[in-house]
Image (cartoon, rainbow, N blue to C red; front, side, top):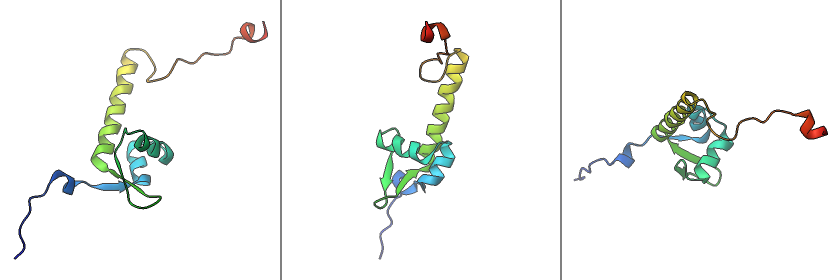
Length: 94
Protein backbone atom coordinates (compact mmCIF):
# COMPACT_ATOMS: atom_id res chain seq x y z
CA UNK A 1 0.00 0.00 0.00
CA UNK A 2 1.35 3.43 -0.98
CA UNK A 3 2.14 5.77 1.85
CA UNK A 4 0.80 9.33 1.64
CA UNK A 5 3.46 12.00 1.80
CA UNK A 6 2.66 15.60 2.68
CA UNK A 7 3.39 18.04 -0.11
CA UNK A 8 6.27 20.41 0.50
CA UNK A 9 6.38 23.97 -0.86
CA UNK A 10 8.88 22.80 -3.50
CA UNK A 11 6.28 20.36 -4.85
CA UNK A 12 3.81 23.21 -5.38
CA UNK A 13 6.13 25.32 -7.52
CA UNK A 14 4.91 26.23 -10.96
CA UNK A 15 7.91 26.35 -13.26
CA UNK A 16 7.92 28.30 -16.50
CA UNK A 17 10.47 28.39 -19.29
CA UNK A 18 12.65 31.37 -20.11
CA UNK A 19 10.36 32.90 -22.76
CA UNK A 20 7.29 32.83 -20.52
CA UNK A 21 9.21 34.11 -17.48
CA UNK A 22 10.57 37.01 -19.56
CA UNK A 23 7.00 37.95 -20.54
CA UNK A 24 5.90 37.85 -16.89
CA UNK A 25 8.75 40.10 -15.76
CA UNK A 26 8.68 42.29 -18.85
CA UNK A 27 12.30 41.92 -19.92
CA UNK A 28 14.27 40.18 -22.63
CA UNK A 29 15.27 36.52 -22.43
CA UNK A 30 18.96 37.47 -22.31
CA UNK A 31 18.29 39.82 -19.39
CA UNK A 32 16.43 37.03 -17.61
CA UNK A 33 19.37 34.66 -18.12
CA UNK A 34 21.64 37.37 -16.70
CA UNK A 35 19.38 37.67 -13.63
CA UNK A 36 19.71 33.92 -13.12
CA UNK A 37 23.48 33.95 -13.68
CA UNK A 38 24.01 36.74 -11.14
CA UNK A 39 21.77 35.08 -8.54
CA UNK A 40 18.95 37.63 -8.54
CA UNK A 41 16.51 34.91 -9.64
CA UNK A 42 16.82 31.21 -8.98
CA UNK A 43 16.60 28.89 -11.96
CA UNK A 44 16.74 25.20 -12.74
CA UNK A 45 18.57 23.76 -15.70
CA UNK A 46 16.36 21.38 -17.68
CA UNK A 47 18.87 20.61 -20.38
CA UNK A 48 21.99 22.02 -21.95
CA UNK A 49 20.15 25.12 -23.18
CA UNK A 50 16.91 25.22 -21.18
CA UNK A 51 16.21 27.04 -17.94
CA UNK A 52 13.08 27.00 -15.80
CA UNK A 53 11.99 29.70 -13.37
CA UNK A 54 9.52 29.71 -10.49
CA UNK A 55 6.46 31.68 -11.61
CA UNK A 56 5.74 33.11 -8.15
CA UNK A 57 9.35 34.27 -7.78
CA UNK A 58 9.16 36.01 -11.18
CA UNK A 59 5.98 37.83 -10.16
CA UNK A 60 7.56 38.86 -6.84
CA UNK A 61 10.65 40.16 -8.67
CA UNK A 62 8.50 42.24 -11.03
CA UNK A 63 6.56 43.67 -8.07
CA UNK A 64 9.80 44.50 -6.24
CA UNK A 65 11.22 46.29 -9.29
CA UNK A 66 8.01 48.31 -9.72
CA UNK A 67 8.17 49.35 -6.06
CA UNK A 68 11.79 50.47 -6.45
CA UNK A 69 10.94 52.52 -9.55
CA UNK A 70 7.98 54.13 -7.78
CA UNK A 71 10.16 55.01 -4.78
CA UNK A 72 12.77 56.57 -7.08
CA UNK A 73 10.06 58.59 -8.86
CA UNK A 74 8.73 59.87 -5.52
CA UNK A 75 12.23 60.97 -4.58
CA UNK A 76 12.68 62.69 -7.94
CA UNK A 77 15.50 60.51 -9.20
CA UNK A 78 16.03 57.81 -11.76
CA UNK A 79 15.62 54.19 -10.79
CA UNK A 80 19.27 53.37 -11.31
CA UNK A 81 22.40 54.69 -12.93
CA UNK A 82 23.64 58.23 -13.20
CA UNK A 83 21.50 60.99 -14.69
CA UNK A 84 21.86 61.71 -18.41
CA UNK A 85 24.64 64.15 -19.16
CA UNK A 86 23.54 66.01 -22.30
CA UNK A 87 25.86 67.37 -24.97
CA UNK A 88 27.86 70.51 -24.18
CA UNK A 89 29.65 71.95 -27.27
CA UNK A 90 32.07 74.07 -25.21
CA UNK A 91 33.23 71.01 -23.36
CA UNK A 92 33.85 69.00 -26.52
CA UNK A 93 34.99 71.69 -28.97
CA UNK A 94 36.46 74.20 -26.48
